[in-house]
Image (cartoon, rainbow, N blue to C red; front, side):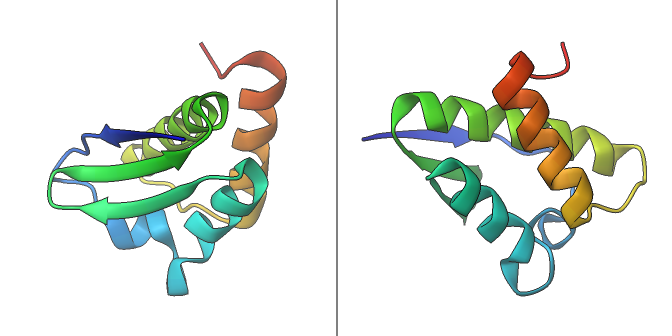
Length: 91
């Protein structure tokens, strides 16, 4: 079990990332077998190393989507997770 802290730009609204009742994060947690929690300095991701890395990549994709002014929905989350699992992200 490992933990990683992701720094998040202060301009990002975590509510937009987490979704109502944390539904977005719960979807990521369930799909990737990790735990994600908000911290003062960003997000803490806990789980098996490979899954933590995939969760971090997925969250980075979603943060990019938010930074473009788009709204995150379940479809975008599932797409981001699939892209990370199949291709290692959008690089």
